[in-house]
Image (tube, helix red, strand yellow):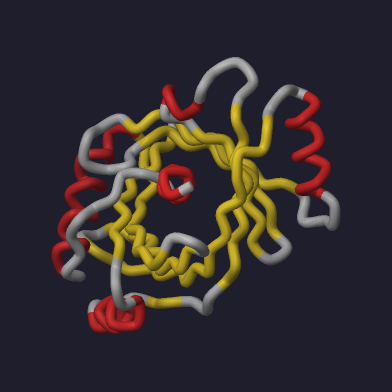
Length: 183
């Protein structure tokens, strides 16, 4: 079973942070737009169970993702299942329609410009995301996907990298939760 070990940090200056990533040897990609559609379950309140179901569009690729409840108090570590969807026109609309027929309801769209970074840190390839989230601001996410026995070392790796990057004030709420709290 795979777990996503993640920490997210609000930042004031993404360009300065990209420079710090670069100084540590990271490879940073070009910005891409990601559109996430989040759905409410017909029989349980995901806000109470701390779960999420989303469809993500990035360029021509589409994925559907289930995120289980967070399992600790400091990071956003959780079980995650991500499955690819066809990269064809109409795929997202068809899946949204299917979920609607099953009783799921669209909660909100989250749109962001994201630059992916890859950095070797403490013998782990950490994925970084430099995000500009519409209606919310700028953030950096640090993430590893690991099996259950590697959760503790992954958390330590991410904490060490965050410290080296000068990141503090970790935010455990998702972009969806932050946007819903603003409205």
